Length: 66
Image (cartoon, rainbow, N blue to C red; front, side):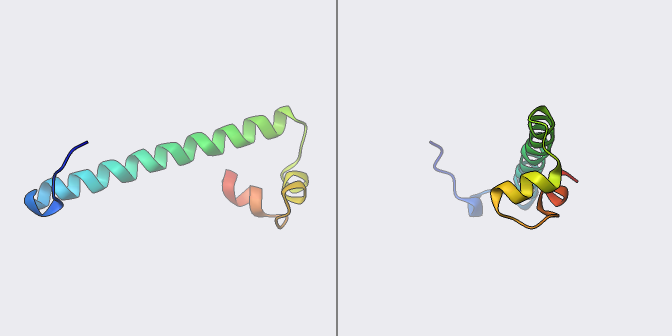
């Protein structure tokens, strides 16, 4: 494990690390959206039916997949 204090890094390095973390999280989010849509369709479920099955409002899955 790295033992580096953010305060010891330069400002541009901190901005770079934050940007990299954001891009990684957005990539993970996109993969999740695509997988959710793929497997929902494989199971023959509409967005509304899946929302109902998991106990959320009708638009919950629509919001995630968009």
